[in-house]
Amino acid sequence: MNKKLLSIAILGTMTFSSLILPTAVGAESYTDKIEEAEQKVNQNKKNIEEAEQKINGLATEKITTQEQLETINNTISVNKEKSQKLVADIQKSQKEMDTLKTEIEALEEKIEQRNEQLDQQARTVQTNGDTQNYIEFVIEAESLVDVVGRLDVVSKLVDANKNLVEEQVADQKLVIEKKTATEQTIVQQNALAAQLEDAQSSLEQQMLEKEVVVSQLASDMATAQEDKYAFLAQKTAAEIAVTEYTTAQAAAEKAVQVAFEQKKVEEEKAEEAAATEAASTEVAANETASAATSEQSNDEAVTEVQAETPAPSTETASQPASTNSNPATTANSNTTSSNSSNSNNTAATTPAPSKPVSKPKPKPAPTPAPAPSTGGTSWSALQSTANSVLGTPYLWGGTTTSGFDCSGFTSYVFAKAGINLPRVASAQYNASTKVSNPQAGDLVFFSLGGSTIDHVGIVSGGGQFVGSQSSTGVAYASYTSGYWASKVVGYGRY
Image 1 (cartoon, rainbow, N blue to C red):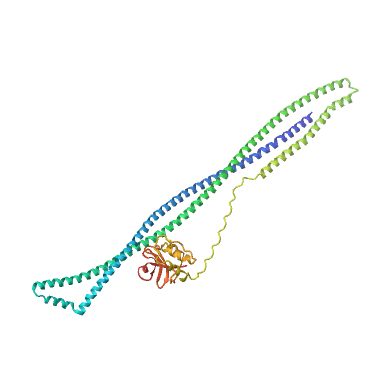
Image 2 (cartoon, rainbow, N blue to C red; image 1 turned 180 degrees about the horizontal axis):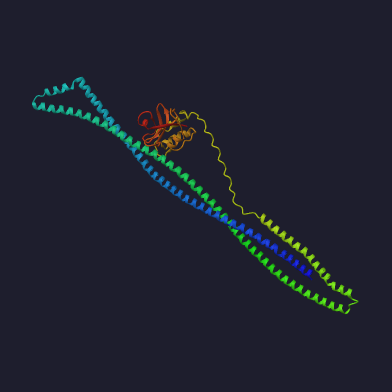
């Protein structure tokens, strides 16, 4: 009986192990997966927060840049209004200059006529002695009244000559004053035009740069937004995985509980069966003992055999059950182990959510070494083009034969020779090779006040340059004497 109970206990333990252990191992593996998925959720939360911070920062920077761009646009609009007014003022001054030229020509003609009259009188005095004639004219008077009349005539003649000289001096002074005033007005307008031209170019460049920044910020914001959406998708996938693993773990734990309760019921049934079998064995033993008492002499050997027979039978019956249980247990264990291995392999081979791979930025091409100096552009390559547009009127912002400003003229002439210059005078100065001894074909730069480059022309030789001035349009002028000499800043070569 003891052997049979032991076999039942061993069988129960092995069956319990085969049912409970694989399920418990599966539940523990789900715990690891849940922790891993929760870590992914937390990491993606952090990535999302960082992406949102980046988006907010880019949005703030974009707003600031757009405000700066709006300010630049407003300034450009104001400058355009100023330039339009300036162009009108320059045109008005040019008309005044034309009128003044006409007036000056008339004054000069009157001055020339007076000069001839004064010269004639001077020659008369020298040759005929008009002073003596005046005296004789008075002495020859026939009466006192006639003397007084002749003295009045002489006095008027002298006063007329005096007035003639004074008018001559006044007209000459007026001519000088008008010339000076008009030249100063045009020079001031020329300086303002150059400054506006430089400011307009600078503002347009700033506007282009800001537009590039705004475009780049928009691109960066789009990229950051895509990253955020990717992190949100990964976070959602990880949360779903946490839910699935938690559900699977709960199911596994429930399976363990069910298996445990089922095993408990089976053990109770086995104990009841063992108790019933033990009672039956005891009754059979008692009956055998009674029979042995009545047949003491003849049947001792039989009684002994009958008494010993149930034990081997019980042991033999229990051994096959124990033996048969081992393969099943082993098979169940192997199957569970195989399933667990397959589950682990499946988890190991499941690809993690892919993160966007940032492509390496291409390295910038190496900056080419500057080309060696060729000695500058020759005047012969520029002269014919410059001479072909002599007399073209000054036009602020002009770059064609309809009208040139100073840098528009130099850009036009050099472009015809195959050389591209920056648009405005200050940029042409900055980009040029500075020289101290200019040659014909170099550029000469001027500043009409302050630290800005306000005017530019082409050196033509002999101390002369050709440029587009607001007072003359395209014309030759001297940069070594006269007005422009004191305004020279430097020389540049292309």
